[in-house]
Figure 1 (cartoon, rainbow, N blue to C red):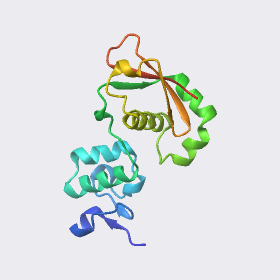
Figure 2: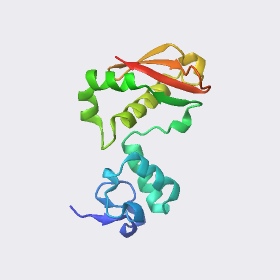
Figure 3: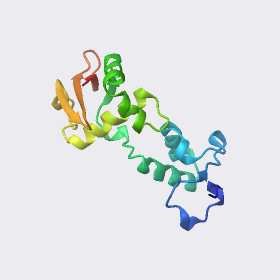
Figure 4: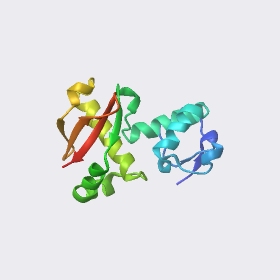
Length: 155
């Protein structure tokens, strides 16, 4: 197994992020496959061309869905995190790639909303229960803040 820094890679070999080390000063020496999603998003914005491409490849490999696609903010309630930790902790432990439980859950919610197709309007999701990957998400509109959807519980 040969490890290469991103700036040492031939341009034609930018198809895989495995065994590639990041040369961006903030993440110097870290493998792209071990960088948290937030770090990969930083690279997509501030990195050089090769770093942007490798960050994009890694985000695609992890099936990351950008929350910018949704027309509203998403909030995860403490109750939803508690329910996830008691009912679906095995799923989190098997699928998480260095993410915290809240980030992982938020990513799952975003994937659920983009795949179910009814995410386009906040009113369509108010008091709605959606099944996704063996979990059931219950949503409500935020009581005080407009433009915000709250994940109330996970079953």
